[in-house]
Length: 335
Image (tube, rainbow, N blue to C red; front, side):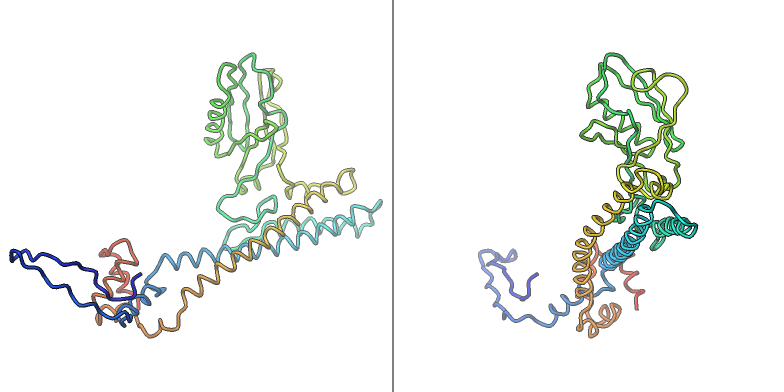
């Protein structure tokens, strides 16, 4: 932005007189005048920049959500440590067995913590940073490592939605993947192939919370046996709350499941701590940009419009994508 009133016109030909040359105008001083300073400060006025208001609101809303997610992760880690200590016991007294149920209930409570109506962590305890997070899972036996000597159709019934997959032996692999992704998209699901050539399916977190995790599969004798559909449990990519809430602590392997979830929670908390530092710096920058001691001297936009129409029109033009009737009316209504 230019801070001086220097004009950069060159010698111009006067169209009314032939052959006459206009004298160049005198250069003004390099000192910034009051009008330009007031114009720059008016551009910082928060009331005249609705985009900045929305940016500040979204930034602090996300920062608050991540802060609460950190509290959830700390509490969940503490409860998992208590559960791990009880799982190491050979026998349980009635009080200890009741304490296990209390811990599970607390884990369910904290996993459902909300802010502004939205969850702060998903079912795998990952902090939610956007809208509609996905939980990924695999189905045992569903991959691309089988022989392709004949055509086969595999039907999946996931969360009350039917997904037919046609494995055509003569079709190119990339074409098949695009077709499969389209079929999953129709069912509001995501699909990708991992390094083991397994189908990694993504379902929205809100749907996962309401789903029992059972997938009904039917085939033609290739990947899956013929006959009526069989129920196959979905295997989440990361430890989820259901693994702990349904866990029988006195069964073999329970300690490993608790340790897996505790390790994931610790890693998520460390990553979240680094992210919060960056978010806090950006949030402080926005607040510092919005607040300025000289803004109090400018007054309202209505007063600026009466006292200096030209400056107000420039402010409208810079603050919006061109001055329109609706934009001017909105600004005039502000006090």
